[in-house]
Length: 246
Image (cartoon, rainbow, N blue to C red; front, side, top):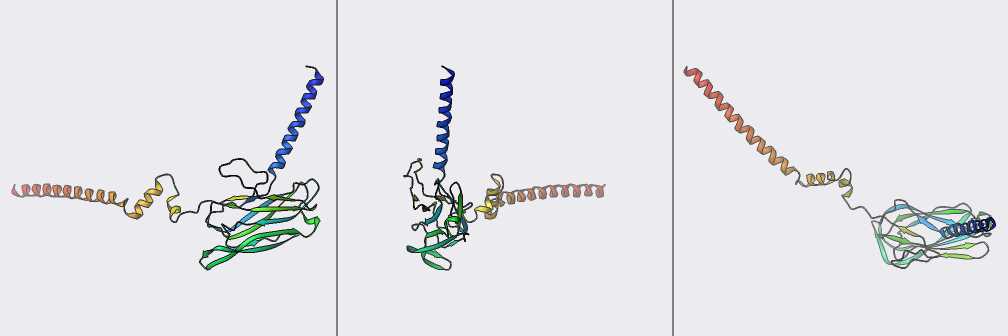
């Protein structure tokens, strides 16, 4: 193989690799959601939506977020975003949410962010974050949000695709999905700390089962000591009587 052929093959490989890397970057740059420490039924949770701009020339000037209504969030507060204006829409719930303060019959179903000007939008090659606070999360394992991203050239990208049940393939425009941790059961925290076995021992002690062996042992030891005391007392009495007789 000539040097020219080798050089051409190497150049083609580099270009192909660059295209693959570039394609991977674009595919991975989608709207995502995160809420560290969020648990099912939890409250006062910050939820952050990360929005990248995927256009080569246009800026992101609009973001419409649709919240799940089948597993609604009891209350939502929107953090002010400099250079953007937000509006919220509420929908009536088919099943009211029961709280300590009463029933909630309506919940925020949509948040619409709009850039005040083209200059405050998300520019190509950049990203931004939009934050809300959830007053009370639903008792659910996951929350699926759907987002419509609007660009300054009028084009839109809908991040609304949901993977088919059992499928591991990621959709082309996946909807942001937030996974909630399991709520801790009452009393589980007291038995959790420490190496294996310690928590169980503490739990048994509180119920009285761990104290029974100790009580039996103490009773047995008392009986043995009592017998020894009687024997020693009898020996001492016999010795004393012998001395008096002599």
